[in-house]
Image (cartoon, rainbow, N blue to C red; front, side, top):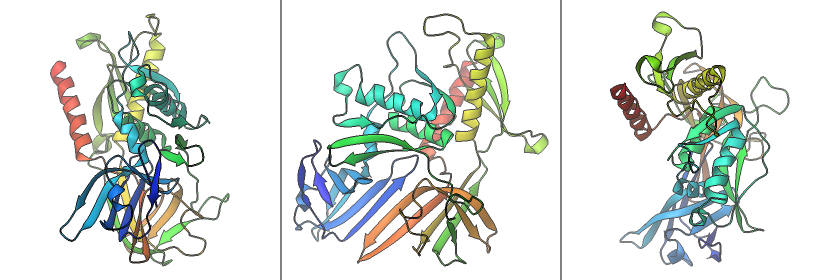
Length: 373
């Protein structure tokens, strides 16, 4: 493990730590925790804003540390991509929102470029940050963002598009590299790659927990555009044909979807309708979908080795006959735990549940909209 300063000057290498837990997330920002004797070489350099590098895919930024009565130093922080959480999406001059309509990768890289790589205010530039060449992956998406945290906006686009995102360190060029990833289909029924199947029956799952949550699920949205009262445009959109008890409705406030182009000309009615429909569908698929998590402690076996046969972002098959689970799901989080000369892998498959802070923010936004109308 190498320690770097914020301006990427190498401090030194450490190897005699007691334990390390490093979490990687596909759509969010993972965390890490390191425990080491405070007397170990270079341990005193493990303080806030410095970086730790395990390899280019595993880089952490230190945010806090503590030293206990036994002189054990506990260091905590986040994946390197947390640096994008220090930027807010501000609209261009004379506009209310920073708007981008394109494939998901183009949209994600637009926001990073405009608010961290080539911002209009040079004070907002993140030194040494570059963007990998755009491959224009992911489906078409429309995003109109205003004063949102950049990392949170990237997470929302990731959930809607299923593309992952990361910032890694290129040691050769000493640059932080932002890129987007698509993952591979390694499920039982595809024939392009050797399938990857996780199952207690196959003895590659040691422990498991399964959660399915439909409490937040909605399949029909009424999307409100600009206007007031009877003049307000309302568009209905559904992800499935449902009626009776199976129909789950929600209102989505989309006042930020503009009725005019950037040069202040009115958009065609059909274009506004399509934009509102797209917004509703994106929200249903990213914020109001059924959520499930299959969290496992796994063991690596030949043909099932981490980062050789499968990695974060890949879609694999998960089975557990005892609880009746058989599903194809994406690897969304991997926590690597090293302690006592042993390495464990805790893997989460499936959609991560919305955290309570995000849920409360969304509900508050809906309440404000109801009061406004």
